[in-house]
Amino acid sequence: MRVLVAPDKFKGTLTALEVADTICGGLEDGGLTATALPLADGGDGSVDAALAAGFDRVPVRVRGAAGELVDAAYAYNGHTAVVEVANTCGLATLPPGRLHPMTASSYGFGQAVGAAVSGGARRVVLALGGSASTDGGTGMLAALGVRLCGSGDRAIEAGGAELGRIARLDTERMIDLDGVELVVATDVDNPLLGPRGAAAEFGPQKGAAPDDVRRLDQGLSSLARVMSAATMASEPGAGAAGGLGFACLWLGATRISGADFFLDLLDFDRHVEAHDIVITGEGRLDRQSLDGKLISAVVRRAGGRPVHLLVGDCALRTEDAAVLGVAGVDAITGHTVRDTREDADLSRTLLRELAGVLGGRLAIEPHQPFG
Image (tube, rainbow, N blue to C red; front, side):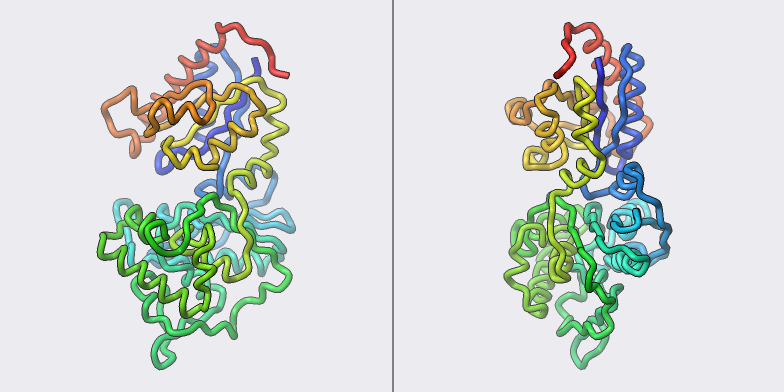
């Protein structure tokens, strides 16, 4: 029996590589060997996925979400660069337990994009997941040379709290993007504004209180007016990463499915053809997992092979999980009363145990090779 282990990360707990290695170890405990293929969908781990596909790592020092310097990297293959928010100015760049919903900035992401373009990239894939800011992408724009001007032409600092003070954008010194293809790899389809917008949908995850959410949404609305881009603000994906999606669209970027892009990059279809069963997973299985995200893309592209899910937490009812068309779902939270989200060792131990049980069951079940 040929088993492909192709999971996403358990966000904030285990990387996709750690999840894949742990599941493979558990399967071996149960009597099966497997092939590991860690995945990404445009969020944390996107650069690592590109490196696994043969790209080179290019180190870059940038400003983190709160302004401190962080050592990050982008991936580059001589033509295409993959740059991610998560390792440049995402939540992971903040001190543990300290969020900055009104002042966090996407400036570091813009620095990395600029470095990739200056380094010769003709195509830049923008992986927007894991953001810490709701600044409408103004930080990124500032790093690319756009001057944020307020009343009296005074310079405005990038950040959610300052969005309403921006009166115009001065692009005279913006980096030359002529001939550079910008691609936003995301499965987030939220608009910039409103109840499903960047502030309302994602602001609370970044520490925004209800009053902060209202202020951020008003600031993003003001920014859209200043940029004469009200229609663009309504486009799917404009609300990704605190409005970074909006700024990227304003720069001329096109939006593609993050899940399918990285599955293609990692040659998932070729890998799956050589296996009989697929085991995948993510940190939390919820209704978003049904809407074209990575898990549903894996199931869709498994070509009818049985797909088993091992996840951190399952928030779906049994009938909803059945919609995915998977062979089975098991969650580590169902096997402990402790909070596994911030306990990597406990998550790893439980995940290995679940994989061992699944491996033992699969090893004794009658099974015909697929294809």
